[in-house]
Structure formats: C-alpha cells, structure tokens
Length: 465
Image (cartoon, rainbow, N blue to C red; front, side, top):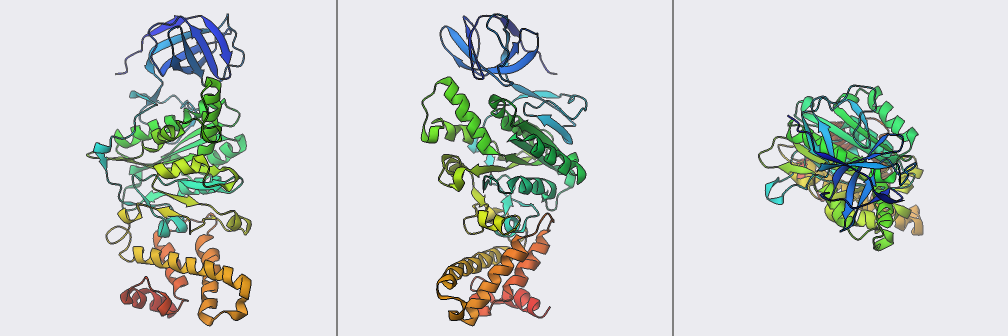
C-alpha cells in the first residue's frame, strides 16, 4: 500500500535564477523534499528543496524556470523526497530523464515508491563481486573481464564511438549459466541529442533487446537540473529490479561528463565556490553516491553492475572527471582515437585498460582454467609488439630479427582480427579461439606466461588445426 504524502500550498517567490526558485517564509520544509511548482498557467513542474536558511528555501526545478513569474507562481511542498513509482513491467519501456514513460504505454503499476536519492550500499553488508558477465566484446571479455557487482567505467573522448559501444554491450551482454529472465539492463542516456536517443531506442527495438531493458533518455535540450536526477532515477529502477525482483542488473550510463557539466552549472547558480576546473569541491562524493550504489548485498539474490561511460575533455585522463571516477571504480576501459581513425571498432586501447576484479570472475569453474594465463600472455605480447613498433619506426624493419617481425605481424593481426569485431557479438569461446590462434604464430620461447601444458594443448593444436 502506497501512502499519500502530506502537502502544503505556498506562495512567496522572491526571485528566479537559472534552474532555482527562491521562496521566503517557509516553515517545515526538509532538505531534498519534493516540490510541485505550479506555473501561472496551472502547469505543474517537478522540483526539490536544495537549500534551507532561516528566512527562505531554494527549490531546484527539473524542467527549468522559463515562463515563471514572481506573482503567479505557487509551490506545493510535500513531506517526502523525490520518488519513483516502481513495480512489475518496468522492463521493455522507454522513460524520460525523470522516470516518466514516453513510449505511449500505460503508467507503471506501482507496487511502491522508492526515493531516487538512495544510499550507497553499506560496506558491512557488501558481498564480494563474483561471476563473469559476458559482454560480447573480445577486448573486455578476454583481457578486462566484467564481474557481477563491479563498477567498470569506459573512458572515451569527444567524437569517439562510445555510444555505439554502449548500445552493443546493452544488446550483447549476458550472465553465463543463468536463465535470461534473471538478467536485465538499465540504460541511462544523459544529455544526448535527439538523434542519438532515437538511435538507442531503434537499436534496442530492432534487435529484440528492448524487452529486457529499461531505457531512460535525457535529451540535450532538457534543462540541466534534470540531468542530475536521471542517473539516480535509473539506479532506483535498477535497485527495484535487483533487490525486489531478484534480477542481476547491468546499468549502463552515458555520458557521465554531461552529468558533471550540469553539476557544475547548478553549483555555479547556487553561488558555491568552485574547485578544480570550476567543478564543485564535492564532485568526488557526488559521483561516489552514484557509483557506490552498485554491488552485491549479502543474503540478497540480485545484484547491480555498473558500466558508466564518460568522455575525457581534450582526451585528458588526468581531468577531474576521469580522475575522480578512477579513484571510486574498479578499473577502466580506455578508447583510442588512433584506433578509431584506423577504422577499428571497438577502439579499445588495451595497454591502459584494467579490470581490478577480473580474478574474481575468471578461471576454473567460471570461464576457463586457462583464461588468466591467456589474458596475461596476450597483454605481454601486445605490449612488447607496441614497443617494437616504436623501435622499428627508428631503425626500420630491415634491422629487426625474424622473431621481431613475427611480433609486428602479431600486432597487426591482434588489432584487425581480435580488437576489430564491428557490430558482431562474440561468445567467450569464439574470443578464446581467436586469441589462441593469434598466439600460435609466435615462437614457443616468447610465450613465457603460458605453461607447457597450455602450449601443447592450445598453441600446437592451432598450428596444426
């Protein structure tokens, strides 16, 4: 049973600045309480209380303040925070950035109202992330594996194909050995263009993936204040699916940079003192309040895994957004502008990539007993080949030995056959087969990360296959 919140109608708007409305002589308001802002034309916009002082409150209006007047604007204050109606049938639907259905379907049959500014998981109740999630992307599955309950961000750059990668992961991802009905995707697009939002919607629908996806779309034309709510609404939906319906939920958020830009804009309108690059000093804790809602809870069946995607301004990995995200999360997938220019998709730059929890979801009984050694050998050989490529640009290939030329050939095939897979989904077995076949062209003495048994069982077999 959903209880109705008490409300109080109030006037007394003193000023409007950006997305903020300043109201005097309000008593009994609570921080982050929900507010309905009633325009002079009796239209209703959603908002929340973001600051309280002795003589006034400040209300953040999610749909913007255009058209509001000081005399004709009224506010209805509720004694509850901003909530999301949750219930069966949330999957297979398209929502706006505030969680309202936009696909023409009926409202969600609400079983409960959950507050969107939910808390991070209590560390005492956290369970260790485990179990491999197959994304269908070879560069991730083989060498930077995603584990259930992990937070693994994608660091991209402006103009790179991260949106295409995001939609492919949403279509391809699955939890091996689990009924497909137990796995769900929550996809949140923040500050995207109408064309990009329409592309996401059509991609999911055309490939039959929408039935297991809840799609939240916040457009670039929407007010910046709404962007601050979109990831929280999406994570609230994920928490319902995970901890009330017992599903394993993969949350994909793109683009976190648009969220941080909105945070900076709203912070500036509050008159707050800026920190690095003009972002608020609390951006670290604000991002942590999003990222730390992912994980596994002890004695709960469901789980939430996060893949946030962010574009690094000027491809600068030391910029505050990727820098702070790297501190909070458990690794990173880095996209390469050079690979993108050469037509490789997905353009994953293997050397700076890392999945800190990869060992929790790979190995015997999970993926393959030979998986960790295979990943280590691929990384080692690829790193050597990259160094050799720099050397050959100075001395020329004529000055290289036969084994060195084998390494350069391995590098070319690694990028053209392993990394470059287009929009084709690969199973983990197909990824392993390609990887063993590429390593088979190298001499045994260079395969220092593999045991003799692994060389005999996989390398020699592929040479004679």
